[in-house]
Image (cartoon, rainbow, N blue to C red; front, top):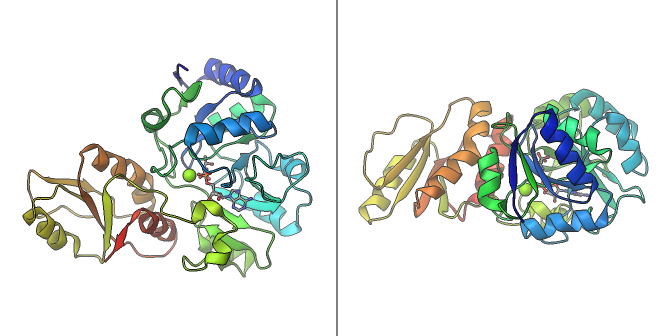
Length: 330
Ligand code: TXA
Ligand code: MG
């Protein structure tokens, strides 16, 4: 299959919507990361997503809608609290997990009796869903196990020849995936921290639980949160703030090629050292993170050293992704 990359204008969106209606695959920008979309109510189309990504079939997809009201067509029932959240945070980076309506195929939900739904804030995503006339199931448009794509080029790196169209809408705004919130439990539980922060959810819900990385049983509820996941090719070491450069030096001394994500100017210089200087504010850091990991991979570094960021607001989602990408914690 030949993959067409199209600038996401009206003509391209119309063409992409035809592909979706015909059961094909379209990668498109959302405000979080690029998604790999197909008709979420078409079993065969949804199956193609898993094949293209090489994703295990029990890892459920998020179904994207254009208008808040469409939620009631996908969920068996929508609790009042879910409507409150939808009204407050949609369109935006919040995914709600609810009881599945019968019309949502089990292929889409990875065999679960629940369905994950969100209304993305990106106008290209909204127009595509609208023009397709169906909800669009879409995981992040990366090959399984790779960092999520925040640019159309990243999608091509991973999925060239596996998807009919890539709509190029430029770099994504949030840079990390949506927050996944399980509304079938009381109080609701954050299964994956993301673009809407715990602090923002607490302001609406009062009580919210979070999924501890050690909570295996709860992790079964969201298969995508199980394992080493957002992994760059290189090994990733997570250190305390201020310790990365000394550690980098010790690996350089052993002849390794080292990548460094640093929120300041590095004092080291070495031909085998590749530095990505990261912004100090968490929002811009999140925006840059996946692209920085991909760039270091492209430099063929043996390992990437990253300093922890503060675990508040977007810092929770950043640390979650770094921990998942890390094969070693220091
Ligand atoms: O920002 C995002 O959420 C992006 C854009 C494209 O919307 N999508 C995304 O999809 O990150 P994906 O498939 O890479 O991650 C979806 C996460 C996985 O961890 C999956 O296990 C969880 O949502 N999930 C999906 N449906 C679920 C369900 N019914 N119950 C529990 N977790 C679910
Ligand atoms: Mg993903």
